[in-house]
Structure formats: C-alpha cells, structure tokens
Image (cartoon, rainbow, N blue to C red; front, side, top):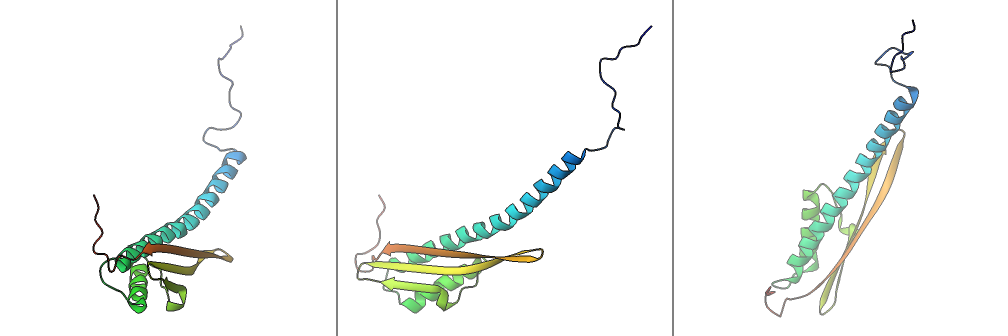
Length: 138
C-alpha cells in the first residue's frame, strides 16, 4: 500500500534561506541606506527653505530692514536647522517694491569610500509692505 502526502516534502532543512532572498535583503538594505542619506539631506533643504521664507516674511513686513539685518537673520535661522551659512552664500536684491533673497549652500554626503556633494539653491521673492501698513487677512 502506497502512502500519498498532500504536500511535497522539502529536501532542505526548515529555517534556511535561499540565495535570492539573501541577495534581495542586501539590495534592499543598500537602497534604504542611500535613501536615508539623500532623504535627510533634502529634508534639511526644505527646513532651510521654510526658514528663509520666514525671514522674507519678516523682512518685507513692518519697518524698513537693512541688508545686514536680513542677512544676519537668515544665518541665525539656518543655524537653527543645522546649516551654517556665510555672507557669501546669501544674495539680497531690493527694488522699490520687492525683495529677493537667494541662498545657496553645499552639503557633502559621506558614504564608504566616497563623498557625494549636493548643491542646494533657494530663491524667494516678496513684495515690500514697509510703507503700506500691516497685511490684512480677511
């Protein structure tokens, strides 16, 4: 009498992995590592961009601000999120009605055996409200 089983018996002991699964896990770990490095750099970029927008809103409202005051505020705000800026990284252009702030910086991502430079640039413009009174939101 023959004994039939519903399932095929494994020839390998239970608990072992295949080479393909191991390779997939290694590749997934490498992608996660690189994704985390680049993701944190771009997260930092958006934080700095938000701080520059905050500074621009401060600069165009209220009373007249000088370029050194605006530049100092940008450097302090960027330092709060971990980016150190020098005055040469900041350009401020003013017209009678508008203010344009351009900021650029470079961040180096450290990888084993390689350093990858990323260059960031933020340019924001705002309309001056120095002589028109406060901004009214309805």
